[in-house]
Image 1 (cartoon, rainbow, N blue to C red):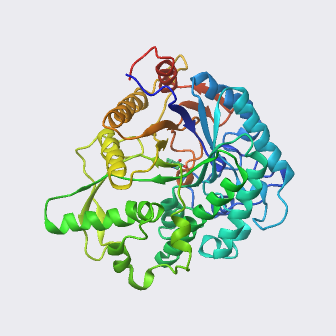
Image 2: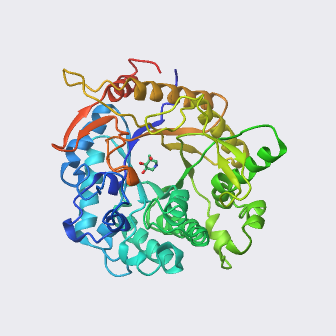
Length: 444
Ligand code: IFM
């Protein structure tokens, strides 16, 4: 199975999920440190304070990424390591130096660095002043972006402004299951708006500092199916798509917010300033797509902001996390995004699965299901490429088992198993398979 010769093959991680070292180098508190300390927020009562201790063990982790045979590595920068309070003063030298060493480590190992600027660890000091619901946070984010790109832009050419703005806004501020744990739809929409505008502001800052930068955002997108062919369910699916997918895709591609959703929001709609829509539409070089699962949608009067519900269908295959496994959904989604929006390039910036891994008596991790998941999704990428979708790379989520947000350490997504008691790493069978696939020894 042929993939383009310059295709990026990678794995993906994020700062709060792997770094640990929460007290080191002058790092400030993030909203996730704060959230995890509140009883009942995290299913197993843990936090990312130590996580994979990547802060100290990064050379070993980058060795693992290199040994997989990947040529790129996606990671994120912890904003509170660079600005402990998130303000507009001088950046923390220790934080910049940490990422500088990390990036040098990637380059020494033949891994192209792909940096995400915001993967959810907002400085708590900013949240104390309203966080992303305040426009000042957009300025602070631009200031942080400016400092980081001045320092690392000589070596990092690929920049992702935000990871999954949907989660930032709605998991964090409407459902209350992620930090900061609010449950207010209007706030969530305002947060979402500021995140999307700040994407444009940051893009300009990156371009100013980084010659030949390639910039994009990573969106969590879902292919949707209607629960039935009834007019009600079909209309509900369209509304659900409006908030889940088009609310992000449309403004980033210069179309403004989808009018049908805007009309439904009424007084909940965000406040939009004069230049906001133009900023959100700042041209990018690629779209990052994080694909996990499709959703089946039914009409549900009175339920949720779009009067829709996601139907649980027991006929489908699911991961250990309960997420539907649908490689065809990935093909459908990629084709749809290409047809409707024509981004210059698409990267699968995340895709992966969580299962309960167990060691065999002789100590191996035989994660057949994850391996099979990976194989089928790589075939789906290939299928989408063959019908003309401009996919230029695939980043498996995740290199390592890590802190899975509200689920704590109960969900393992890694190609590498982490024993959190000893911090021992061990390549799983899925990781071995990816390795042999990348060496072109095994087809997918
Ligand atoms: O672990 C997360 C990641 O931080 C963002 N995308 C989805 C992953 C799995 O839930």
